[in-house]
Amino acid sequence: MNDIYEKFAFDYDEFGSIENYLGDEKNFFDRIFRKHNVRTILDCACGTGQHLYMLSQLGYRVWGSDHSFSMLDVAKKNLQQKGQTIPLHQCDFRYLENTFNLCFDAIVCLTTSLPHLHSDDDLLMAVKSMKNRLNNGGLLVFTSGTTHYNLTLPPIEVVINREDFSRIFVKEHNTHLQTIHVLDLYHSPQRLEHNQYDIVYRILLDNDYRSLLLQAGFSDIQVYGNYDMSPYDQNSQRLIVTANNY
Image 1: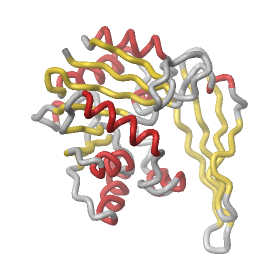
Image 2 (image 1 turned 180 degrees about the vertical axis):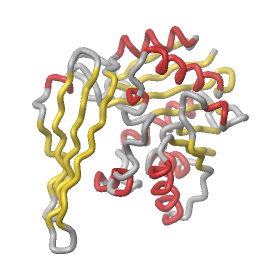
Image 3 (image 1 turned 90 degrees about the vertical axis):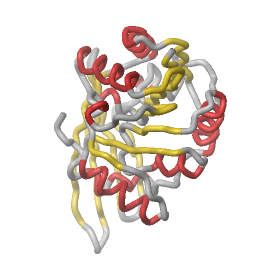
């Protein structure tokens, strides 16, 4: 995979600092991890460290990995500023075993990270790699913003609109792929520039995740439409998937 975040990583947190996660998201993870007696967690697409920080604040032992060196640079800085020392590793999540020789109680792959892979073979390879790094009975969690409902929304979305900065998504999709053109517009005396980043996702919906996880050997697959654990349906604005390694 190319590092599409090589430059974007350093402005990524215009979305918000790493402690700005939703309370219901925090409660969801704590509830589900306590239910499954989770103590150790790998975030295998940790980005700038938001979920590492959240999970460490909840008392879990966490490790982070990401394909992007730039994302890891930002994550290290963010976590250091919060007084957190968390192991970080550069790693393609198709090959977790090349970096990690230990297994975890849970692995998370969040914020529409898995769909950066586009082929069936790569997707299955990644999910099998995650399974191989889970303890027996371990839990795998995916979250995604690609849902049946969200694919029907207007193609232009103003995500951030501050006095000094705007972030706009321009979205297009076909049957299998969705492209999000991220337009960053800085408009202040201190910074006047614009950047564009193009992110292409494989469209994975509820039945796609079920099929993929079953092929990889997971069981007890649950698909939720929100952090309140409501069932996923055609009107859901989130897609959250959990599966057990039995």
